[in-house]
Image (cartoon, rainbow, N blue to C red; front, side, top):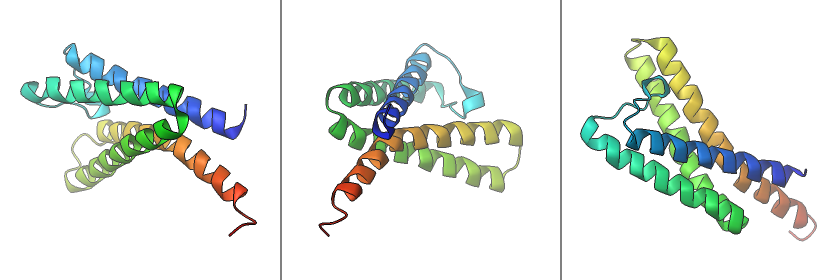
Length: 133
């Protein structure tokens, strides 16, 4: 497998994982260990958003990888922002540090995995245009 194929698979798996978190949230799962514990009124909204956005991204990565990699990167940026917010919250109020650190690590891993396909495409574009620019 090439680096691009590995990145696309990694991004697709992360998109499926995000959709699964959304589906579980819709079913009432409280993923407090992952830092996903919204109020009950918002749980359905956030769960539906996660399910729909990640499912569309996974499907687009499969059908149109160049466009899907851009969608995945936008979701990845959101996950990385959530990881950064979790680390800031951990520094501000260090209650339950192991749980918050696990949540931040999960969010960062999701973000990096979703950014991988676009990063791989950028590397291919740089390599192809190295002699032109």
